[in-house]
Length: 427
Image 1 (cartoon, rainbow, N blue to C red):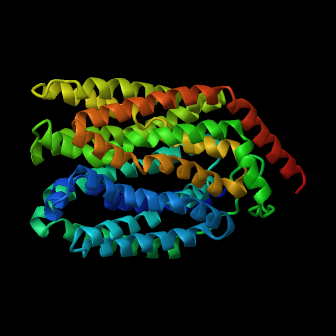
Image 2: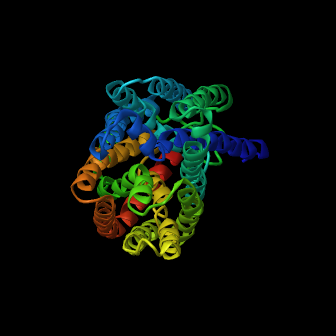
Image 3: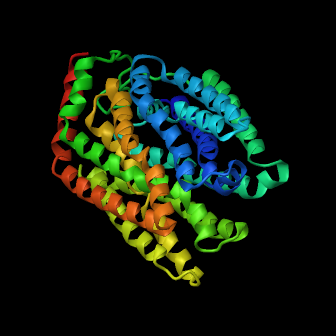
């Protein structure tokens, strides 16, 4: 690999990092704005859950479409289009003047939320299997940092510049700027270029999407366990993203400053967990093909334990609550980068966007209803019960699904390497 190519691929990572950082800021800060927006439109927890579920449902429907397009056409140009859509729909959401219009325009922001499979598969063609976990972990730092930036914009900046609509105009405008950067700055890479069998080849065959290879995705036993854990695993993330700030304010009595100084360190720890999880997964993967799955299973199990301890901490014991939330944040993201890398460890390059999009489709098919379910439980009982019940049940299921994948990952990974070796010989 030339030094120029090595430097350029990190430039691509930097562009994608800022795309994800600003996109996640735009997407996730709505959780911090729950009280402001709810008071503005006069809505309850159930209606708030419907607002967030709307965007998730739209994203879910579009995942297979985005995945197919990414496997057929230039991924960089499609990512530029996704960034443009992000900016435009956020602006539409900002000008809504009644709840009905706000609900519809918020749902439209889900169009670009399903665009990530192309980003991850393009990165997979710049970096080989032994580095992907770290790179994905690095990219996924953007999600919690974006959450933190969104929290600062919502709690500190919005009141100073005219409210939540003003910050939506800012983040939407940044989406349009990033679209230009991606369109002119990111080059397409041949699918499969970074696979070990092809990495040293100056010229290689272009692998094109085929329905036959797409069907093979569903014949990989590991993928079925990945689908199942994905269905359950996103429930806690959506619950925490869209309801945790209201829980702190309404049920634990935190003011805006207390929320910021409690959650900012927690989110920074959470951010580090993405990279740590990816690095641990790469380290373990080099020693056993089960490595990424083992790291992931530990993450969900310990996350369930520590969030239970945190939410059952007495309200007056703020220091103890903070410690348990920090411990939860260490383990929550350990599986994230490893799940993406595992999908690419068992699927061929030309259908990886489709495989990733299918996994996200399954995730969101269930998780799209997590905000509604949380709102219903919260209105019937309280937010603590809703958050705790959904998180512990979902992560417990994920742990058992990962145990299943431990028994299938070796064969599926070996089969892919054999298939890549056969292709390399035929070139």
